[in-house]
Image 1 (spheres, protein in one colour):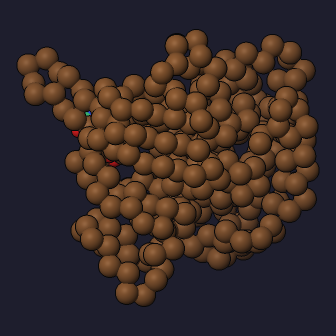
Image 2 (image 1 turned 135 degrees about the vertical axis):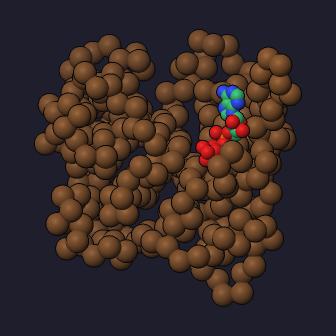
Length: 298
Ligand SMILES: Nc1ncnc2c1ncn2[C@@H]1O[C@H](COP(=O)(O)OP(=O)(O)OP(=O)(O)O)[C@@H](O)[C@H]1O
């Protein structure tokens, strides 16, 4: 689904040595998988993530998403291709003077969805997915961090992307809210088959969510392994940061629909005003609804 081939990104700064933030990285992320990218601060994780949708154009190498080589597209074609790639950020990046619904609608306007009724229908669907319909007319300042991130997820999903890029999506959130946001990401991945790439320095997030892990250091991917290895007794990562991943963390239920969170108890989450998604019926209905309009999610 995502293929990075010998990608390097160098930042030039006047009067200073150029800095190679991403150094000859090749990485394959199969369709429907959740790829974690982990590493200490400054390792090049965010730059690599931004290389995937060419928010940061690599200095060299090739980037393909869904069989399309983005690095060879014209600007106009790249703008179109980017609609299949959603992105969420640590700081949520909502527009403060627009309501929740208007924030989500904005991404559809950018994606060229001209029919207002179609936009509103898709806004409603996207808000349903993250159970935040009741906040549609509220402004971002009136939302908690977790609610803001759920709106950001809705905004990213509204254009029906095949890929969701997540740049430290839970770093600004407390552990309860983190678990809830991760559960939504796990659900979206499972229900819609969206391929997810998540950059984080939070080892617990990787252990809870990722299928595969790439460890970055000094711009390079120094180690890759399936996340399941982290649970295997005797697993011994080669790198020091890989070893650090072995510390305990949150566990999410990645199993069947309707499953709760085995990390914080459901009671605690309910008390925390962050509802676990109604996976079973709601998502099946939404999937059918989304799949029914303009080509479907997948
Ligand atoms: N636009 C830029 N111009 C110049 N240098 C940059 C730019 N963006 C990133 N860098 C540098 O590239 C290196 C990698 O940065 P990057 O943000 O990708 O790392 P990171 O692993 O995501 O770090 P963090 O976890 O702190 O966000 C850092 O040294 C950073 O200062």
